[in-house]
Length: 189
Image 1 (cartoon, rainbow, N blue to C red):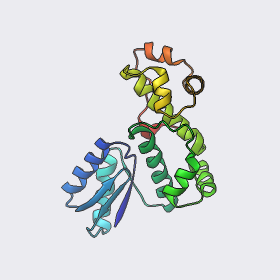
Image 2: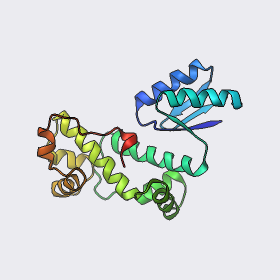
Image 3: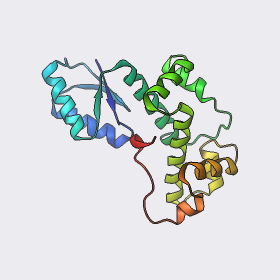
């Protein structure tokens, strides 16, 4: 059985979900962003306990088929942008990658995503890339040029333009502010 869980966006999320489910006696065969595979029989009583413990920790058990597809798609994008070693391919065709990963037509996924999330997949990708850029800017280990290259932008100007459009400030302005303007990945919209 596979449990689909909303808001699992990082390795700490995986650890938290694993620990909480193990406390409930759930045998976990595999766990990744948004999914837990178990061979434990989940009856209504156990399902209610799982829902409760997940909600206490900021997660949500997903039971709607369309919501499962969207969560899997979002997790794939997050994993690709935030948890890969760096993507320097400036010719990435996200629609092909996503379609292949999800094993569904991109047109269907695009319509479903827009209707359920209120933004396009393309805009969601841009928002995630900008959140990653914010993180890398705050680390202050890479130049803006290196960040643009790492995130697959064709130029620094392209990244700078999108950064300003999304955040309302330049990368330099963002670096100089002392407040934390970053968003948790599960709240990026």
